[in-house]
Length: 80
Image 1 (cartoon, rainbow, N blue to C red):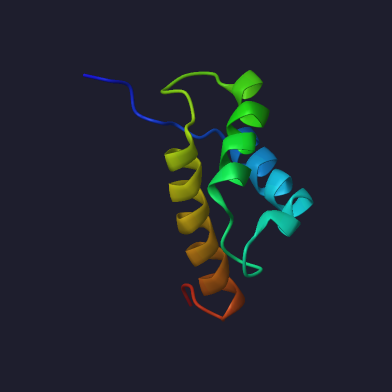
Image 2: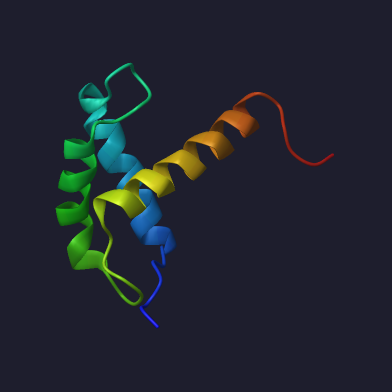
């Protein structure tokens, strides 16, 4: 069985900071182009501790999940 992608908190923070720094790579202000995610792969590579190497697809998936979560929190979602 192939290893799954695992994101450490440090990798997540580095990824979010990378996207903030490269926000001009977002086609409509929110959706990043594949080339931006490919650059993120190289940026994240030295931080890999375990799990599968990050790919353009896994970065895109992580962004989608993170964007939905941040939007949910921004819009007042959550517990309580």
